Length: 242
Length: 362
Image 1 (cartoon, each protein chain N blue to C red):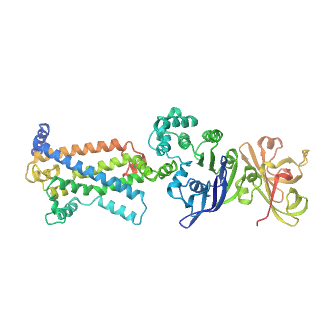
Image 2: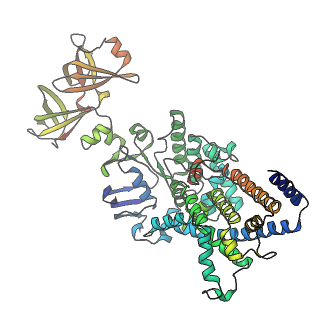
């Protein structure tokens, strides 16, 4: 018990004194996950729009598949990417394994399904009357799509924030693709796993607190965003957040 | 201006519209009237080029819309504007909502501002220009939707059940607005309603749609007093449909026997023809039997007994047994003065010209 209490106070100390190693790990985590989130958003928003606005055979199947991938284990994504990126793998020549760039790639792949799925749900939450209204007001096909995406902007933004949440909190890809190399690819989650393993509890607790703070910021952001959403859109995102 | 040619629309194996043909003139107010689910919305959507007909085409000023590409359809669509039954507003200000049609047409900012101002002024919502549109009431949203349509200065304004979800005060407001728009801009207005009285208030001509088919097109007077068949008659409020046989016909003045009574009517039907007689309830006058008969030119005076009285606003819908059932609409006041009640023997008076006769369709 005293170990937990003293560990906690040492952790607070590490944070308030802005311990360089703690800060460096936190900064790298934020950088990698933000980069992955931006990349994933650039891909997911048009992709979600493409799926939503087109009728084609197997559309339902694709959506179910995307939803299944929401909960794909991060270690499975890590494994697949490891096989692709390792020296002998088909993408080995790029030398991305055990680099921050590789981790960005891995997290991007990891969160594209959840982001795309939520974008589709967000667009689906826009009343069909809206698109009829836009078309009858003389919008071209392109103008209609742009306007509907704008109309769904808050729900889409919260899809992006949720994607970021999944990226920053995952361990599998960061560990397997990053390798937890000190000063190079060590991020919050992998560092916690390692430092706990070697008994450095204050360090782990400090990183854990930072991770929780980031989660808190995400939740606050989500609430700010979704409080501006219609009830229907909130339900599309999995129930009203009250 | 708009010629609908043999248009059908099917969804899956369900037929929504079947072989619709009619023409709408520039500058008129044309109303599609019919029960809910009869296909009114579908026909308006086809006219606005939102959907394609399964068969047939719509000719917009000599342009065959079904054979046109999307660019032509877009340019035609931009000459029209549609207001939907449940208006959808976009999540922005009232003024922002009204501006959309102009934004899509790349109209200049200053021009947009002045036209939005003008449109909001017409619908009386200028004071709400900066409000969030989603916070408006149903009636206000409907007015925003009308302003949003008006701002593009459409040649054709389509209104789908514009007052179906509104209270009487807002209904009155929207109807006045529609007439004011028509007076001011001479816009061709095509609207749909299930409310025949509204159709009567607004329309120059009406098309009755029943079960996806045009049952009758004509003036309000034609449809109210000379319906083509029983279904239309019932829909426009004709309660009494009697069957009879023409006994004699003297140059259009016919005598028809209807369950032991002889009615005088105006019809070209020849003697021996089986016919149906349509009588509007407000055309039937009642007098108490043995009382003083009103001295009128009313040709048909038929004795009967009241079997049912149902209050209907300021009127009483009174059913009289004359061998078959005849319905009369009497004011509450005269019902009281004549002390009418179930069982009272009365004389029903009907003018010969108030009876519409068609050959019996079986």
